[in-house]
Image (tube, rainbow, N blue to C red; front, side, top):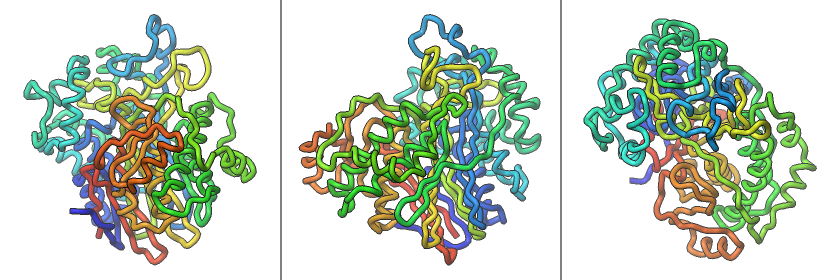
Length: 525
C-alpha cells in the first residue's frame, strides 16, 4: 500500500524504523519536547538499527526553537593522540575494519548531552524504550538481515564481541530473528543513572577505554576525557522563498546548501523532467568539486564557506558553469558512509533535524565486550599523508558525509528533512526539497517518487548516474544523450537512502513523511 503524508498538531516524529518513531512520540506524549524526543529516537535506533548507527558513532543536530533561533550541535570526535602516520607505517590507507579503523572518539553521546541542556524529562525516561528493546530483543528487518549476510565475512573475525552479539547462533542474523543486546541495555542503563558524561570521564569511560586498548585501538581514556560536543551557528543560504540551514564543516552540509543555491538560479519548469534532474546533477558536481578541496575540520581549513553562500555574484558565476544541455565529465571518486536521519517537532513550535552514524555498516566491526558498544570507523576516511585535505593528524576531525537539513520558509513554514546515504545525502535532500518547495509536490510523494544518485550511498563503489525505474521513459534517453553515464537500477532501492521530512505550518499543523525504502514510520498525534 502506498504511503500518504501524515498530519498532526501536538507532535510528530519521523525515523527509518517504526519502533524508533514510536519511542520519540511516547516522549512527546509524556510532555517532552522535540529535542528530548530525538534523544529517545537516537537511542532506540542504536538498538533496532545497529547496522546503521549506534552510540559508538557521531551525530549532528540542527534545531529551530519556537522563537525562531536556529543553532547546530556537533557531536563528532577527533583522532586519537596515538593516531599518527607512524602507527600506519607500511599501509597505503587506514583500514576500514578492525582496531586501527577505530581511531576517533565517538561523539554521539556528547551531542545528546549538549542538546538536553534545556530538557525536563529524566534521562531514564528518554532511554526507557531503547533499554527495553535491547534487553527483550527486536525482530531483525529484511534490510538488517541482508547487510548482516553481506558483511559477515569481514566482521565476524574482528576482535571483540561482534560474533557473540550479532551471530549468536553461529550464523548471520536472518529476517525475523530476535536480536537481544543485554550488554548494550546495561550500558544505556548506566548512562541513564550515572549521566551522559560517564561515557567520557566516569566508570563507563574506564570500561570503554580498557576494551579499546585490549582490542588494539589507539584510543585511550585521555582521548575520551578531552572530548566535548560544541554548539554553533549552522551554515545558511537564501533561495527564492526560504532560508536553508545545514551543519558547518567537517560535514558536507556546505555542499547540500550550495546545490540548492545553484539550482535556484537555473531554469527548470517541469518536476522530474530533464532540466530538473540534469540541473541538480550538474549543481551537485560543482558543489562536490569545492567540497572535495575545501570541506573538512575547520581547524585545518581557512576557506570561507559562509562567505561563498552569502555572495550572489560568486553563486551566479558557479551556476553559469553549468551547461544546460551537456553533462560535465565525472571521474571523481565517491564518498562512503551509512547513517540514520530522523526528526521531531513539538506543539510549542520546536523543530529538530538530526543524524547519527557509525560510518560503515557496523562501523569498525569492534563490539566492545564490556559494554556492547559498536565503535565507528569514521577515521578510516583519513588520508595517510603529511598534509592536505583530510590528512590524518592526532585530534583532527575527519570529513563527514553526515548533514541534517532544515528550511525556514518566508510564509512561516519550517521543514526538517534529510536522509542516510553518504554521497547521496545532498542529492536526495535536493530532490525531495525541490519537488516539495519549488514544484508543489505532496510531501510523501516527493520522497516516494523515483530518485537518482551520482556516485554511491552504500554498496559497490561507482561513479555512474544511477536512476530508479519510474521516471518518464524519455528522461533516461535524454540524460544519456547529454553525456551522463546512466545506470538504471530497477525499482525503488535502499541504495537511494532512507529519507524523511516534517513540515510545521504557521497555524501549528504538522505534516510528515517517511521513505518506503526503509522500515520507517511517521508517528503523530
